[in-house]
Image (spheres, rainbow, N blue to C red):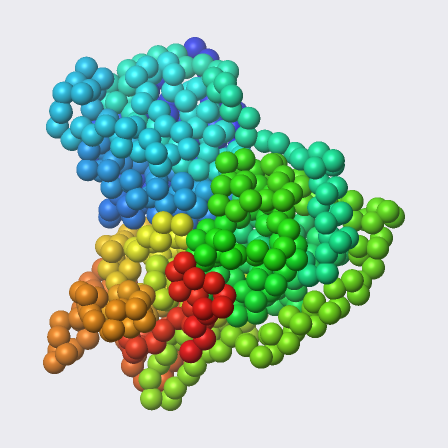
Length: 589
């Protein structure tokens, strides 16, 4: 990616800015964009029609939907997701997408139309100052005022979005810049003084990690999304296996280490397993790989991992010491660091670290915790519990041997946490969720972007009725564009996670968290009728005995499918460490 393609027009060919922009996308290997047109972006869309044989343009039904489709594409491929909108409200509808990408380190290139340069700042029709609005939520941003700069801007945007800690880049494109014709320079030098995104930590910085390991009796690996971004999953597994160290995963770390591996303690943090939280609390050496010590993991910072030494490896220097002091800080690419640590473990001088049996007592203690506090999935005959529905979905796909060909996306809320707890994944880039920002409405469009990128994969959006309604209009895009995700809708008629907090901390007083039409009414809305109105097959179930057959029908259906599962709203996501509390305050039932 980044090299001019052989199909680039001749150096002497004059081209409009819009054509230069689209040709630059082709040159950078882009095959799909998610784009909603408007007055200030019409030249770009006209150019996209001229490149239809090289780039697929998918028309969402809302700009936010298109932005989250780009997320699904980027998060499952590692390539930047590309989305377009017009100026004004179209552009501001991308703000949540951009903030989400910044929080979760997603490579996104967001291109917005803008009013002409001659009227910038005059409050022209559909003008908004996008660079100013998004300054704090982008990795970088451009307002392009010269068509001659376009090729350089595009080259820099791809470089910035995908190197170091990935993130979103905004390109705001005035209409006259799109229309103006120039002879482009297809390989201009980049102008990024001070941007040094790549660093490989030298051996002298890694050696203290092995020295600390040699002194440790209870080491623990805390692995996050940085493992995926640095393509380090294989090295993480080798390192953990060679040294015999247990691994706990953040929400974004799921899939980076096989869930079915003996050393995997599953998710840690607020709704993580009891045994992973016990382990991180008791560890005398915490190996933090590609994480940011998020409050949903740490709880009360002063109490988190306070019994041990902390190693922190991260490509983003600003994350080191930000929330938690690291005794052994390593600034550098995590993939390179883990690769080098694995090589060091193969050396004769470190044979004692891989001999096995070093942490027998520690692993025995973890086994005792696992046995005493297993992850429990309640089930009932008289109702469909949401946890049980997710677990049965996982079991059916597992028994078909298709787990490694399945991508899971979620909305945000209880269903998101239950999916993290009960749908076990073994490969990176198969779990797609909004973690840092926690954006409701994320699940369906993200599943669509993932399905476009991986047409042969099973792509499932596990969603809640509150989240799902926020981008429900994208069912129209599913039908029209022939995109076929499966939607497991866990419908409890409430904003479930807020209800859980109301139950736990506000005496069950309902503060506008009921989404239905009244206790004497049918379940509302009728999602099956809505889906059918969009041309999408739907089915609703309420009886536990219908669950397996309905899940199989959903999986086997040739096309998008909505399975509306009516579930009770009284269920809580457990275990739970209340916000700002410690493992000692964990709620187990």
